[in-house]
Amino acid sequence: MALITFSSPLHKDKTVYAVAGSHTQSILALAKEHHIPIDFGCQEGNCGTCLVKVSSVDGKRRPMGGPLNVREVAALSELGHITKAETEKMYVDDIPPTQWRLACQMIVRDEDVLVEYPSK
Image 1: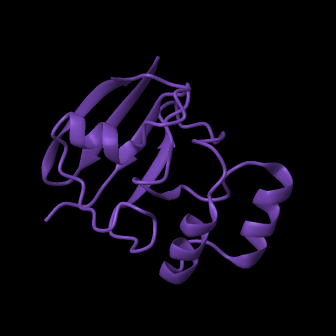
Image 2: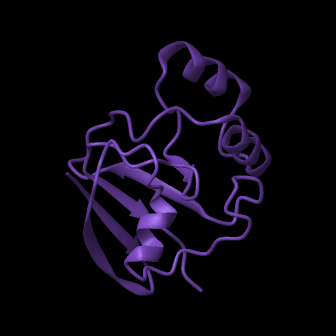
């Protein structure tokens, strides 16, 4: 069981339990289930609308979710949140090289994380 804390400048922080390891529940699906207003568009990892910053709750840098998929790499590259060198390192180390993720693509794992999202 993982604890996911959603944080936004305009909304009260909300912590929810997530079933880790299902390999199907994305951060966006979890947010929608708990009525957390993360903006989204295509829900397929192409548009970058659901960009969030994910960090470890205890402040230690460790893997947050699985490696980025091809669509997420393309969107984050276009948005300037990942470099080609970081992408290549990720494929070797199997660790996400950036805290920036797409909520529709990041699958919940057994780790407590803070998800920061913009609000309108």
